[in-house]
Length: 361
Image (cartoon, rainbow, N blue to C red; front, side, top):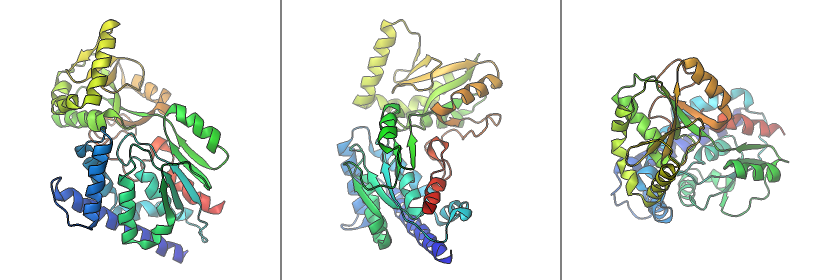
């Protein structure tokens, strides 16, 4: 047990050092000319390559993702997180090969799984998405320079996974069925499509609505934690919300986003669907949770109890609930949807607990 705690501490120190590198990168600014052969230059080159490779991954969004990860990787935060699993650490470490199928909808979306696998003492066998196959390899290189012991515990590829003892896979509802078929014979976590929702009381201030706008528009709304649906009171006026969104009007300059906006605007017009049009976002009254890019659904409510019932009924479709109202359980603050804590696990499944229990199999 003492040995395991020592190993855990080494991992914490290594990831905390990686966090320090990321904070240095972020604080340096986007136009910094980093020294050749430095960790910061390596990361900056990976960021540039990603921007050129994937039009959805624009520089401000990549930097936001790196900054969010840096905020997680502090010695104090990692130690507190690991201490929550003291009863799960076994006397004899039985390393497993953990296959991880990573999504590519937003930058470094699979980093938390990467962190969990290595922190739990297993080997990470990652299948990178072709949409995001440059950033994590750069972080792995920096991490293994910090702690060479991780070198034998990480393998990355864009091909088929093999030789795995357990699987963590993230994808759409369609790919989840594929994952269940091919990976169902081993211990697994298989995640499906989910979205963020927001509960508005009508008393939100300017800062709240500014944060909510970020929850909607960051990553062009492509993340599972992006707000796709609003619950608003029956007499709600959208005027202040629209004002808070104005700073994100730049999304219309992105050709892929604009194609979505133009397409759904035309579809709604042809079908006589009533909606609010901000000029860069369409808001449609709709019961469904998941909305397409450039569209947000909203639903009126009469009582908080109605919303609670809707949230409970749609729990399998909801990743997080953004609100400033304490009457909504497990709500997160406006503007925080894309900065989950270490203990905010995707789909509500405790990844660390799953991985630590594998040592006993």
